[in-house]
Image (cartoon, rainbow, N blue to C red; front, top):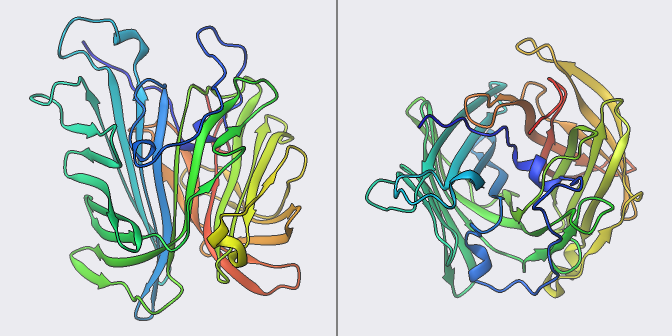
Length: 370
């Protein structure tokens, strides 16, 4: 039968606050076990693997992001048919070409029945091994740590990238159980891998750009899974994941209501000095304040986005500034929304450039709905 994709976004799951929804239960605290938890968790409703980063190729600076989403289709779980769409797999990819001030973007989606003879996608439960037709993301062990390989042959660009761990996993929240709201069920399992080394190639219009390995190139991986739904009062969210040049890692977010007030906030900071011991400061509700400083209006959607922010946290006061303003993505063909996600710089309270990463903002082109 025809199947309509749900309106989902990666951060609607990450920043989810649940109302008391029938069938949704609190996630139990548990120890994450690897490599098993690198893999998929199809018993929970929503999941994604998300990598952002930046690198130079000669005098060219590029930002990139790739995301694989998995969504369980509750209505089909009890069907006898081997062709029933029990899971949906989505994927997004984008490249920010700073020199030409251009964003390249592509998206895909398909259904998964669990019958390998018919499916065009899979997400392994044993380890990170995800494919949507010829788009792939796979993890393997190496003597130096985790290594991820991504192959994204998109319509007008290609990513052939390798990411190597330089630091231990960062467990978000309380040992990987991350609260997203006041009720116990408002939580997800969530870990990050900041400060990934980057190598490989970005191809734009058949022109290859081999990435430098002797610069401050770095990537960030998030993996999260939950039963979460968007808070009924929420319109959208603002989120940053930034690799600092000294090896530190900063996450901060806020969930907004329709008036623009903060419904929930949080994040974390891990010092580069202590990264080897995996020590992190986890921000509690009320400890993060994000204040817009400058707005940009999209000529395509007419949405106005704050592209420069002051971010106040227990670990410091920072400024986040988009490297180019136009990094709006139209994902209505897959996840059903228009949002802004792009390469941004981080400055300390003295105005010193101290990091680079990604800023994401949703709900500005219309309230996010599930």
